[in-house]
Length: 355
View 1: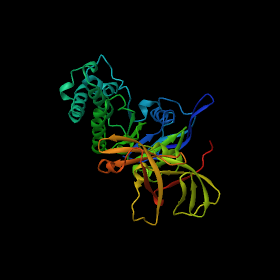
View 2: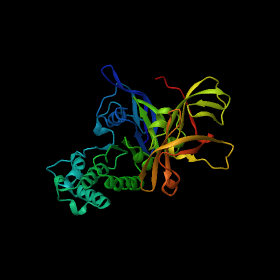
View 3: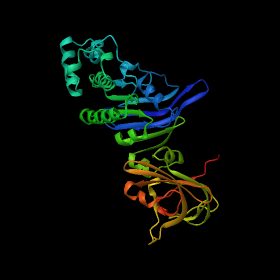
View 4: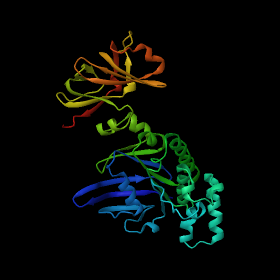
């Protein structure tokens, strides 16, 4: 078992609140990702759970046991750091088995467990090497091996892939997910990379300024963002936003014109309206009832292999970004005016945030 509960968790440094009343339940055996911009408090949350930072107030529980004041060694967790934190003078075998040796386990049993983990991670042929003779990916495997050899209740990963190149990141991402499925331990993974989070998580926790903005599956986070911050942070290219006002029931007054929506709204309310780039389509001559047609000029086309990013501008000065499949790019020409369609059910409406 490995259920983790944060209740009213706070962490302050002087007068600065880093974590400000965090409440979160992490289910046994789930892969949960803490995601957010730099400085949002995600790594601090992980360090509080690990016992590497003291809690200002609130509690942390693992399987119903309050571990808030326990030493790190007594929490039955293992952490993999961004910089791997391997002992440079020890071999791979010694690094993986270090925690077991500290527990005074017999050399024979340590060797059996280390060999088992090394076989699982493809490190058997590297057991006699030292860290400086390993690649970045191999060092990462050793760090993971050192964590899983103890079979803890909870695994913590603090941006473990950020020092790897793009191809190796993909490879290690797949390996970590495979290990999670095989081991079944609760895993909490910190990253600022939204693609990493979307690909790996059972659930994602979006954090900002020490608070939770939204908790949900990757699908929920992407398609049903609850706040403007979540909507703008998730997605690449990011969501298009327009400032608007509710002019009459089910109609928005925007810089690009009046847009109909499929919801009842409060008259006069100032709002932000968002639409994902992939939801902006070329207008079909056979207009559908829930579509809003807008004329724009194509101002830039950025080819990215199987897709292209198209920038367009309305006469009001409102800029929109669209994602277009490669097969469709021939329908867009730089400097030309085109008609685009904005489906009413693709619009996201958020209360106006004060500038």
